Image (cartoon, rainbow, N blue to C red; front, side, top):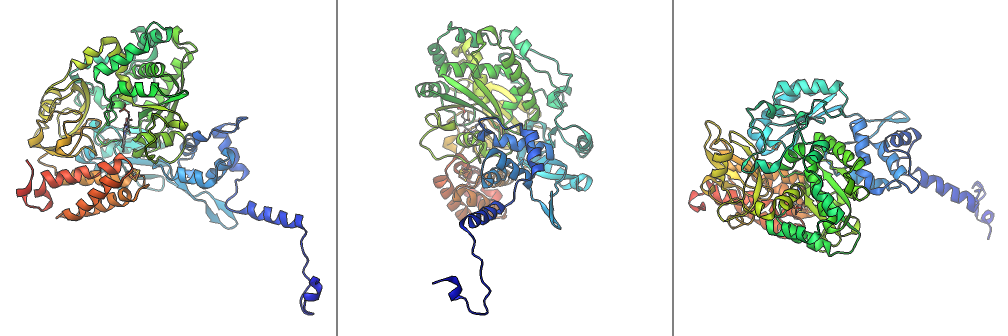
Length: 634
Ligand SMILES: Cc1cc2nc3c(=O)[nH]c(=O)nc-3n(C[C@H](O)[C@H](O)[C@H](O)COP(=O)(O)O)c2cc1C
Ligand code: SF4
Ligand code: FES
């Protein structure tokens, strides 16, 4: 039967397409699906990310490339994401889902203007006011309330942000990439006006003086200067630090060189790490020497991931050491790499630490360009990666995902990252400070480190102390010191007019304890029986002017904001708990139902630890939440 015989006399004849024409039509149609990369956007992207290497762009550098765009345009225009996807040969959906995961990236959609789509707008300057607990105690909410009236316009916006890692300088504000410590309305306004006209990626200040910072001389002392000291109030990029030349001139890299030369074997070094009792200082407290042995036994190639995400509210120790002595850390990294047999190291630094990034980039470049003789040709690959504003990326497997250029979603375990980690390879992951201690432990001896300690505990702890004390800062104190001793001996006592009421020993996750518990030794394992833990030793001190319930609410809002959303108990539970905790009388039964499901069914430590502050308030501060004090635990 022909087509013509089917047509009625009134029907017009249909011209059938040839198969080639049909194919072309399909090609055209599919080509037009979604937004297409235009030449201008592609050229703009290539200008920033560089010409395509012959082997193609590296997929793992997606977040680095997003940063280049975000820094240049102060936001991510949709057309640039399309162009980046095209250039990097990654599906647009993947680029979009990564870009929208991180708080520091702002995706701005194009706006239809007749036939044309033009760029949407976003404020040129973002002012982030930290609303973490220590900053809240120091007046952050007042700044958040009043700054928009002074600065909020189409060119500037004021938004709350989680802990900026500067709690000893509370309240802290970030004006784009510049920090305003001890922020006031006036100082933020001044910085904002300066920043609008200034070059944002300003090089390191030139007035830095080199010092020889010897950490071991600070044992049982404060690392941070007292706030009444003039140098405590300057922007950290201008503080003095041990640069490469000074570090070398004072015996730096001698240990790494001895190992590289074969003058020092791996075994005695691992033994020293084990004997020192050094445990992971990122919070989990896994014995470091044992971790080295486990990864050492894995098949090559092996990788290292270094955690300088430092997102736990109240924690600022890694930043404090990095600002002063970056090479002590880099030497620890080289020693660990050699002993464990690591081929490549990736250092993940939180985005909030802009000055540290510039400093570390510059000092690492000096080491790589001109290594000590024994290390020439023997340095592992070392890459610095930049976080993008996501607390969850401090969790080790989420950090690995992020280094791979993906959303920072924690992985299910097993397999453990020591076996299957970064890029599928066995991975040694360490907190910055854990590596920072390697040189001193090996050179001064494991005995030196373990000889410190109080109340039956061993070693040194870098406590980040903030809140209602006279001298907040990083205190290098004996492990096992209790809160009363820490405040009296290291912090100059409580602020005038304040009496100790409560404290958080381990940031957001470690629980909240009443003053009656201030004699518990502060160390790994000592707080668990009471419903908390020391974690990264972020101690926040509250007084009679504060409430534990407000502190717990602050923390729960933080968890809700930072939950990666991968598992329902955590995603929904943290948000629901925060709402319930706003009531003057807490619904303890419903909160406990949420606590149980979050603890039992969350994939990672964020969801598992989120109930700690809630349970502590229920247990130790029932009078604050409308419940009978008779049940309060001693
Ligand atoms: C939610 C969450 C956030 C974390 N954030 C950090 C962090 O910011 N820095 C860090 O070193 N470890 C952090 N950790 C701990 C890491 O998962 C990991 O235990 C640590 O980096 C291992 O290094 P270490 O053995 O030297 O401590 C976090 C853990 C969880 C569950
Ligand atoms: S517990 Fe929370 S943060 Fe962790 S994986 Fe689940 S949703 Fe993400
Ligand atoms: S910097 Fe604000 S709470 Fe840490």
